[in-house]
Image (cartoon, rainbow, N blue to C red; front, side, top):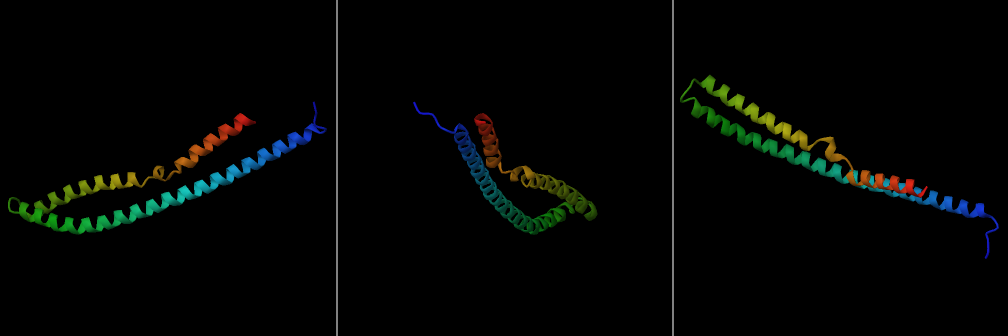
Length: 130
């Protein structure tokens, strides 16, 4: 049976290896977080551009339709009342759409979920091994 002459050297090498592994793990997690945030930001920008484009196109069509609705309603009520009714209804729908769009663009949707999950697992694993 052979014993190591310097048991501290084995422990030192083990701790050094563990420190190196933890360092590599942290580097990997940082790279994953960066990649995931870049992907999410890119999706966010694309969604914002699509939202803006659809809003502009929808606005043009909406003006024409609302003008027609107000003109048709003006056959039954005074023109000013027809315009007021159509305007109030339009503002209500606009508020609902704006609230939905803001919910889709919330900060929660930008959270790097995989990275957070991996960091929690890594922290748990490190606690178990130390």
